[in-house]
Amino acid sequence: MDQVSEIPLVWKGVAVALWIVIFLVWERVRPSAVPPAAPRDGEAPLGWHRLLRNTALFLINTAMSPLLVLPLTLWAAAHSLDWRPEWWSGWPTLVLDILVMDAAIYAWHRANHEIQFLWRFHEVHHLDRFLDVTTAVRFHWGEVLLSAVVRMAVIVVLDVPMATVIVFETIVLLSAIFHHANMKLPPKFEAALGKVIVTPEIHWVHHHAVRRDTDSNYGTLFSFWDRLFGSRSTTRRTPTMPIGVERRVEQGLGPLLLRPFQSERVRAKQPNSVADPA
Image 1: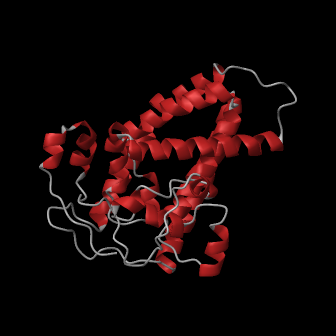
Image 2: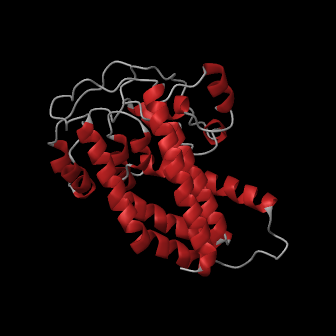
C-alpha cells in the first residue's frame, strides 16, 4: 500500500474507534429503547450472545478487508478512467463526490432490498432483533464483498481518488454507527437534523419488523434521497417498535453465515415468527 493511502486509513481507524466508544457510552447513559427481554420461539439467544454474534460478523469482515476489499478498492483507484482535469480538485469537488457517491449507496441499498439474490445477504443485517452500535458493523461477508465490487465500478467510472474514497467511507461508517445507535436525542433537534442527514429516528423505522417499513428509508448519509425518490416511510419510531425481519427470527452465527447460500426450500423450513404489533 502506498503512503498516500496509508495515512488516511490510519486516521479512519482512529476516528471510527473513538466514535464507537462515544456511542457505546451514550447508549448506556441515555438509551432510547430497551432490548427484548427474551428470544422468540426458535430464535437464537439475545443478550451477550447477540453481542458476540455481531462482533464475530464484524471481525470476519475486518479480517477480509486487507485480503480482498482494500486490494479491490486500490486496484479500482489505480485503473480509473482518468478523465478529471487538473483543476477538478479541492473542497468543492470533494463535496460533490460525497453527494454523488451517497446517491450511489442509496441506489445500491435499495437494490439489496428489491433484488432477491442481494436480499439473501443483506437480510443477515436485518435479522438483528435490536439496534445498537454493534448492528452498524453486522454484515454478512458476502454482502461486503459484493459491495466492494460495486464500489470498484463507481470509482473507475467517476475517477474517484483513493483519498476521497477513504474520506467518504469514514463518513459513511460514522453515520451508520450514529443512526444505528440506541441513544436518545432531543426530539426537536433530531427532527431538524433529520431534514438533512439520516438519524436514529429515521433508520430505526427501516429496521421495523414490518416489510413495508423495512423496504423504505434507504438513505445512509443524506436523508433527502428517500423524499426525492418516494421511499420515505411515514411510520414514526417508538421505544417498543419490534425490530428484525417480518416472519423471520434471529439465528446463530453458523446459520447466519450459511443462510444466503441455502435453497428456498431449506429457508422455508426455518422457524418463522409474526412481527409483534407496532
